[in-house]
Image 1 (spheres, rainbow, N blue to C red):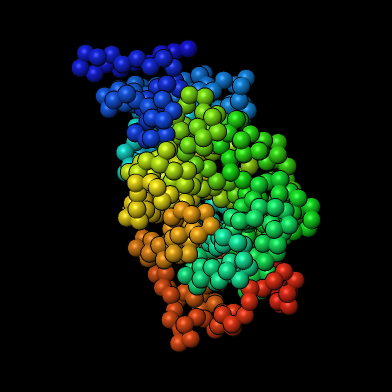
Image 2 (image 1 turned 180 degrees about the vertical axis):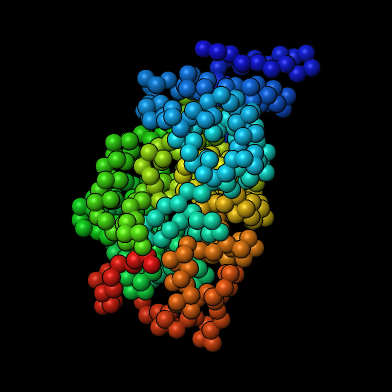
Length: 488
């Protein structure tokens, strides 16, 4: 196994293997310090970054950071690597790869041609030697378009997950949050609930409630209850209206086992959801068939005691190899959710959010970010505003929409419906096209380039005025039997 070194002012810094080099080159974060893999000093970190810049990309194909025999994620990365796609960049080092990514000659089409040849470790490596502006500029070039009932990832668009969580799963409370989000133009990525009571019966109840709302108002979006994949499989067996399959995933076999999942189980759930064919039929005659929704986050492998001495950013990028294998509709890093043990403050959260978004896009994923922090982190809303704005500039596919930015069930701070409206206005972004047309049809958004709400004398658009005086639609209620939403 090769060793790596760089000399600064007469001091030769030596790194025993690629795993160590990647860890020492990572910008400062508390999780790597906790794991004992971080650079001992700023000088050592700079030396590691300089040494990493000289590593040929081919080296990542010859030296695994986690042995092939010990980890099924490594086997997935190696066995599915596309050498033909890799060929145009095979001669590059990590440093010249950075220059290539930032060059004017390389556009989104060029990146799409090579993405199957880029391994997660290559993506993580180049991210470590990039400034924030580099991560924004390179990620902005990439557009990953996915479809179920809405088309996500298009140029000039930013979608939102409407997150109507409730501490007791009260249907009326959830319906109120859904209505609030829709009236601010949120929900085109997905209406997704984290259930407080996580069992199959409750999952089915919530899925039926969301399906009733979507059908009643013919909303072009998809619903998801963020439960364990085995619960979703049982819900499918019971005939529940499952649009998307959700699962948290990680970058090592041990991390995924801690989540109670395997690659085989994810494949079973993927195939089951696709067999339902609940996606919209689009103008080209194809049915939206991206049915998976994955969440990730730096620090999960260390939390599961399954990090193998790797740094958390490299392992996060490896989680994207798992996601990429199943062609998901949505992937997002819940960047600050695990806590300050892994990302200590606003600076570390911001850096990690940009890294995650960049690496996911570079690997061909429809990447979003839950721009968030826990209440015991050294961060605040101003930090999140900065990250929200730069991710918008970087072409982030979707963000979260949480009532008041405060999730009262999960007890963390995220982005609000108002925040999504802000970033769309400032950066000239629109919702997904099918959802955008629905917002205008429902007299929520005014026609035009700017995302502008229509003011109504009654306070809400006429189609929703009656909703404020009725309970949330129960499964099997007398709502009109509308057809499933279809794209234009």
